[in-house]
Image (tube, rainbow over all chains, first blue to last red; front, top):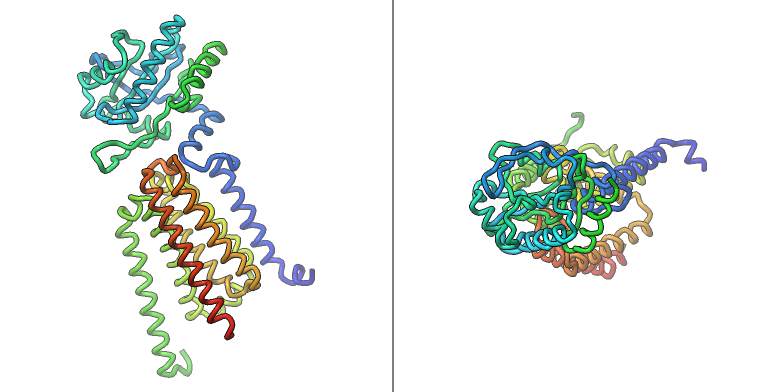
Length: 211
Length: 196
């Protein structure tokens, strides 16, 4: 106890380091819940929706559009590149299934599926069309596979959503595979696991009912 | 400098040379930054420990050049230890490892604070009770083993920027570190500690 009065500064320093350190750890992990990049961004948008940035896209038929056109609709966004050997094939098959399920429930006009290319230079409309045709025979615009036009803010979109797109050293692109749910106000409100198909349907249905 | 003898001069110049060496090592780490941060094994297994050890060496030099720092280290030993523990813990989070690749401010913070954690550890270490030091040694080995095992066995990637094979290599490397750490510590306990 004597020491405490004689030299308060050492104790104070310990306390300050403890408080600052714990606060930083708390913030960095969103309350000790998110320890990885992916879990952090998923938890983050749940608490703090992110506005979908405006950007010009070109779809598989060469048509130009912006995601802002879909305000009032739910939009599911995933990120793919057509040369992708594994992951994006799975992403495509999930969208193929979703497309069927939505058509079956007559909800096709309430939900827009959108795949955005991470390789806009190679992924011309021809390649985008070929990619989509692997998973669906439908030719309508319920699922648009699109590329950001060069210098049209594609990088900005990735940064805002926390999507990582880096060369994997084997000629491919390493990226996070997930479905980004954009609500009717054009905000990213939830990031869903592609592997959990039942959950995707459940969340989409809930979101449709809610508004 | 008063009463400087040749021995002092030589000692000082050796400190100077060591300081230059340290600057050179930090420069080399910066020079190879792109390579060191391109893989999880090199990032977490080489770069981070190097920066911590670099800071530790910096403290040793500081103690020789400015002996009064030792008293400061004794006084603030627990604060310094907490700083080390938080520093290492935070930079081991996969999320911050990833973020430091994409946020320049975090990258700068990493390159500054990791050496500081090493400095703080060396300054406080000799003033900590032996029981606490023994506990810290064991905990360090246990953490290396836990993380190593986790990274080798986990089916998913913890870092968005690195592949799963890289993660498994890192796991293996951490197990090797744990084995070497434990081995050296065991030898010290058996052959050195008894004699003092």
